[in-house]
Image (cartoon, rainbow, N blue to C red; front, top):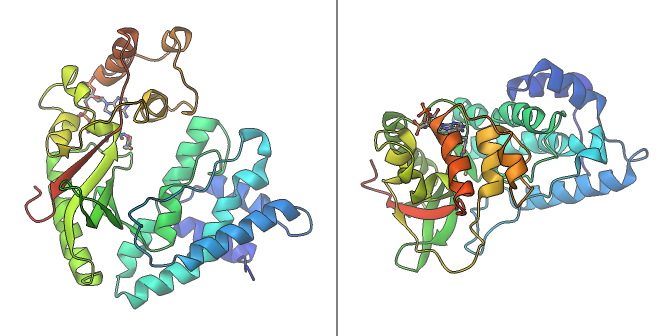
Length: 308
Ligand SMILES: CC(C)(COP(=O)(O)OP(=O)(O)OC[C@H]1O[C@@H](n2cnc3c(N)ncnc32)[C@H](O)[C@@H]1OP(=O)(O)O)[C@@H](O)C(=O)NCCC(=O)NCCS
C-alpha cells in the first residue's frame, strides 16, 4: 500500500525539500526494500498508516508522541527510513494543502525544512539521515498540522490555556537559523494570524503557546535584557512549575548550544570541561550547571490577538 517514488522522482523532490546533494545521494542509496529489510518496511508501513490517518488533524489536548529515534548503529537504511516516509506521504500533503487553499510557496517553505534537519543530524551525529532524532516536527509538517510562517513555525492544536481550560492554541516552534530579532517575531505573528484565519477559520485560536528552553527565566540572569532570547521570553506568561524534574533541559541544550547528541544526562564535569566557551550563552550554560542548578524547558502563553 505504500508507494515510494522512483529514484529520479525522489531526487527531484529531495532537492525541493532543501536537501543537500550529499544527503540526497545517501538517501537514494538507503532506499528501504520490503524483501531486504522486512522489519524496517513494516515499521515504514505502520508510520505511513499513522501519518496519513491523521492528515489535517490538529494536535489533541492530551499531547502527541514523536516517532522514536533509532540508535546510530542501526545503519543507513534505518537512519533514512523517515526520509522515505516523508517522500511517500508528500503527494498527499500537497493535495491537502491545495484543498485548504494554501499557496505552494508556503507549502514548500514549510516542507523544505527537511534539508536543515538532515544537515543538523549530520552535524550532531556525524551521520546522514534524520533517524538519530526523535521525530517531533517533521511528521507534523507532513500531516498538515505545522506551518512555517516567516521566522517561526506553528502547530494547530487543542491545548491548555492560562485559565486552565482547553481550546485552540497555536504551538510555536523556533527553528535554528537567523537571529530571533523582535521584528522577525512580530512579522511572523502577523503572518500566522492572517494565515490561520484564512485557511482554518473553524479553529478559533485564543493563544500562542510555547514550550522551550528559550522560556527559562534563569537565562535572564546571564544574558542582557537586550538579547533576543530575553526579549523573546519576556513576551510570555509562564505556567508555574510543578514539583519534580520533568522539565529538566540540561541534555537538550547540549544539542541546541553545542551540536552534541542530547540524550545523555547527567551532564558531568568531565563533559562540561571540554565544551566550547565562545558565546555568553555557552559560558552561561557551563557556569549554571557548575553552580549546581539545572536548565528548564518552560511553557508560556501569549494572547493571540494582541501578541506583538
Ligand atoms: C533561538 C536562536 C536563534 C537565538 O539566537 P540569537 O537571536 O542570536 O539570541 P541572542 O541575541 O539572545 O543571543 C545572546 C547570546 O547567546 C548566544 N547564542 C544564542 N543562541 C545560541 C546558540 N544556539 N548556541 C550558542 N550561542 C548562542 C549569542 O551568540 C549571543 O552571544 P554573545 O552575547 O556572546 O554575542 C538560537 O539560540 C538558535 O538558533 N537556537 C536553536 C533553535 C532552538 O533552540 N529552538 C528552540 C527549540 S525548543
